[in-house]
Image 1 (cartoon, rainbow, N blue to C red):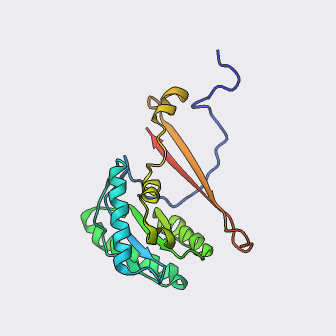
Image 2 (tube, rainbow, N blue to C red):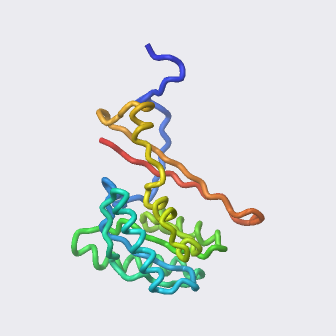
Image 3 (cartoon, rainbow, N blue to C red):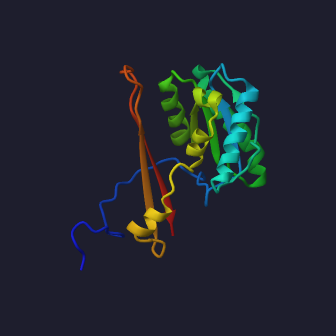
Amino acid sequence: MRQQGDLQYFRLALCVVCKPNAKDTTALCGRVNSWICINFAKNVQDNLARGFCHELAQMCQISGMEFSLDPVLHPLTAQPDHVERALSTRYHDAMTILQPQGKELDLLIVILPDNDCSLYGDQKQICETGLGLVSQCCLTKHVFRMSKQYLANVGGRDTVLVDALSKCIPLVSDRPTIIFGADVTHPHPGEDSNPSIAGLYFLVYV
């Protein structure tokens, strides 16, 4: 008999129809075979951007992902006031290389200035609703410091839930399942003109 407060799986609920543009963007089993980087921070040199991306790719491999060490194209430095043109052009340049091979672009790494919160929102909107492209944003200060802790956090190694999951949450692999995760980014204190930005991610097991 089910007790009040127990977790319930596969219960029918009200469905809301939405149309996110997430076509062909899932990296199955933690696999990123093709990626590019765009740098919007003018004080980050090309060699530093390349080194940061290489270190991040290595950390993702250490974290258990299949992550290619080589990008499809070299990191591009672009002006923040031309964000849409830079993202669209670089995306199509990459797809020109990948499409004949029957491949998709799995990830975009974006280096952002430390003091431009609006650029983050613009970039996310263009990538996720326009291009259908998953992106990972990194601030300039982390590129310069390049600490292993930060790289591990971005690479997904900061929290290990295997033991907690095995003891607290029943396994759900025997039925079609969808798992949602949500996050929100708030502007820095005093930046009243910038909005909070929420993101929703999901994994589907069938």
